[in-house]
Length: 270
Image (cartoon, rainbow, N blue to C red; front, side, top):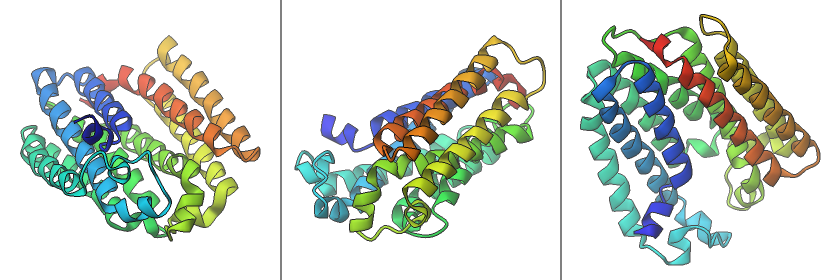
């Protein structure tokens, strides 16, 4: 069971789910937050399992023993079955929030599957990340009593952060990707180009999310702004020093910092 959970990319899956829960609760979804939590978790688990299932051959080729399938801790067929089951469950759980909200979230999950299924090896590999993260706050907003899609900055900020996360996510694996023929946009730009793209996109996302919402910039949002930009600076510096394994956690820390600020203005989604 632990090996199967590891194959979900457990940390990122739980982090995205917690962020969606904070947004939904802040937006006044109340008991409906449960549907957001279960649908997002099912969707994220399905994407993570699909990633390990579809990448198993590549992972074996480069000796990725950190992957449960490669390490022999879980069967590929088990991971495949879990991915398909989670994706199936995600659909009714998503539509429990309404047709519009469900459609937005299912589309976001479909983008994640599209990335796993082959878009990761194309020049438009960033688009699934940008689209999925832009749709997440939109899906939460569509499930509120007002039924609107939320303010512009929520989708734009989410998209920028998702795009930046894409470039940061692949930094430690650029060499393995090159060895297995993955030619997404980060691989085409190389280490320094990908770090520059990650830093620029994340910085833009931090600024949009922390400064664009209505009202006074309080202590939490200001702290998120400063911490987020500081982490982006570390990302850029680590990239310049060709240290991708430092640049990656710094970029993730920047996303985490701004997510806290994002959650404090969840009421504006409704």
